[in-house]
Amino acid sequence: MLCEKVIGTLSDPQFQEAETDYVDIEWHEAFSKLHRKTSRSGADVGIRLDNEVLKKGLNQDDVLYFDGTTAIAVNIPPCEAIRAVVRADHPGQIAKLCYEVGNTHTSMFRGEDEFTFYAPFHEALMHKIQHIHGVEAEKVMIRFDFTRSLSSTINNHHH
View 1 (cartoon, rainbow, N blue to C red):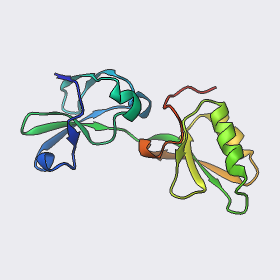
View 2 (spheres, helix red, strand yellow):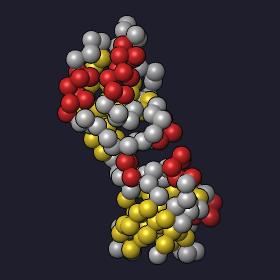
View 3 (tube, rainbow, N blue to C red):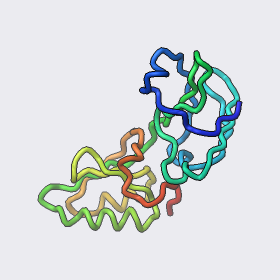
View 4 (cartoon, rainbow, N blue to C red):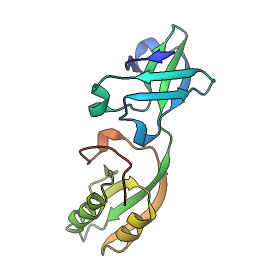
């Protein structure tokens, strides 16, 4: 089947009774226009989206197809990430953290509070962040929330 637009989210009333079949879209694929995936039930799913996806991306529970019974929805699987927490007594280090992450062209996301940030995990960036005075870093598994992105673009490029 070919899906050419997001028709809603699983929380929309018309999908409340629907059976859900998920198609996994990795976080770094969520802003791509073309995909060929297999859903969890084994359905071959082609995704061809317009340029709107370049700005908004695909998000968790976006519905791509609905036949009245089954909704095919997006699942963004959790991935390895760096959780960086700037100590409250070192707020100036937020700028240093942002600089180091941005310098590697890595996406960055706001966390639960004004001192917590997330970035996709890679060893070199983890090493840099661990050496910023006043910043604690740990490797975690999370599902990125694109509404909390601090980056102008989402990609998986890193040094």
